[in-house]
Image 1 (cartoon, rainbow, N blue to C red):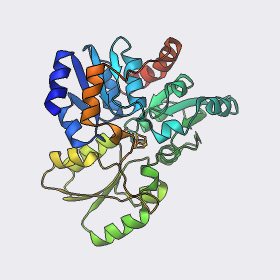
Image 2 (cartoon, rainbow, N blue to C red):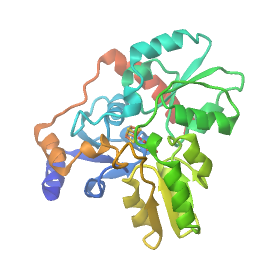
Image 3 (cartoon, helix red, strand yellow):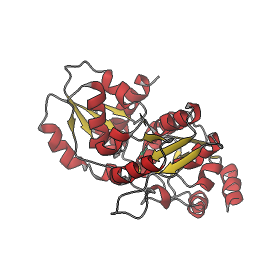
Image 4 (cartoon, rainbow, N blue to C red):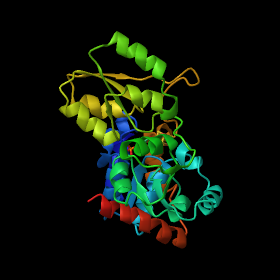
Amino acid sequence: MRDKVLQLAKEKNAVILAHYYQTPDIQEIADFKGDSLALAQKATEIDADIILFAGVHFMAETAKILNPTRKVLLPDLAAGCSLAESCPADDFAKFKEMHPDHIVISYINCTAEIKTLSDVICTSGNAVQIVESFPREQKIIFAPDKNLGRYINEVTGRNMVLWDGTCEVHDILSAEKIIQMKIDNPDATLIAHPECPKPVLILADFIGSTTAMLNYTKNNASHKFIVATETGILHQMKKDSPNKEFLIVPADETCACNDCAYMKLNTMEKLYLALKNEQPEIILQEHIMINAKAPIIRMLELSK
Ligand code: 13P
Ligand code: SF4
């Protein structure tokens, strides 16, 4: 199946982009893998006929908005995101009306409709930088992740108004289990994604985006890491640092695992079928594409 996907990608002049949360087999066949920011940046440069996006819906949508003349395929249209779903456009428009003197900074994990209601987009990799690009007196709504928003408020000393959304994977990582892991592994360094809740972040030695965590584990002298994020990242961490040990933080009792169920909907078989049938394709209305593009471009300009 792997060889068939690669052969078909070649025949159809397709580029495969993959997020680090994909399964190792998919990460290994990707032409480019990255976190949300790197994938958005890459999407602007692609001149192949097809972009096969191994990630979730908002990521493929962003690629389409940034490179609208390419055919963008998502292997499974059900690959959504709990954060994006937590912020319906109608409700958010009303929320925005309640704060008329505020600008909107939205985390890229949101729908294209929410992007059209935003002044600028950010990812976990550049969120602090984007927020700090505005004067301190600027009033800001931050959506949809309240954990990331609260973390940025603390780091920057701001008081952004937060939308009440969470990532269903990071929000249930267990602080109690981390404390036990730290007791059992006193030599380990705890790293965490800023989508984690405050009790987890308080315990962390380092907080950063997917790429920031990867770089940290490569460059830090520690030989053992407790990793508070989605499990897919371990593949690249182990590749980059084969002699280091990585322990994943389990979810609390409400959930059996801490894989992102949306990310893991993509399989090699679905990648093959998507390329073969050239669908499911990401199709967006013209006015949504135009209005969602401006805040994403603003983010890319600010991230240079
Ligand atoms: P990154 O911005 O670190 O890639 O995070 C994406 C994501 O979905 C985190 O849950
Ligand atoms: Fe969305 Fe969380 Fe999955 Fe990332 S890990 S895609 S934020 S549900």
